[in-house]
Length: 215
Image (cartoon, rainbow, N blue to C red):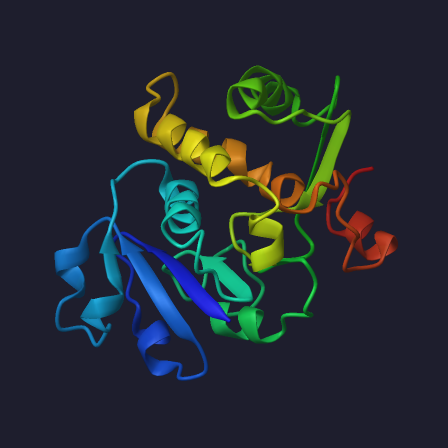
């Protein structure tokens, strides 16, 4: 497995200390990584646009012809509110599936027409998916997907031109705040990489309900 990390100003000590996996760091501030222990040959500068989504698309474009079998896409931080464990612990519990979320499995999104908690996002998806060449299904339901593990096969299920189109839009759009453009793809990664619109729950429905999940 290869770890692909989006870096801005985070401490990547956790990445330096782990010895199990090779890595690539796409950094929006690459000079800040010099002397931190990160292998400088593995640092790639990237535009400061589109949050982690732009980095993930850039990797898919750069490595499209030379992808490893499995890829872990993650932020630069070791811990965060949307993770239930440190990122390396999340990566090591990978179950080998075609898409494995690295975020807290309690947190799920559900979007559909007239959905009570995400109608504005559903409207954005309806507006922008045609620009990317994505046919939006009637409903999307998945774990929060800004960090995940997927496979070479699933990335290759789309032509590289698709990833280039999404990358260009993130880099060039000025219609919304930068972080909001990345959130659009947070709702689409599972569907893009599996072709399925509903991700199976990793926790029992009753537990999900107790922690705020709504059908």
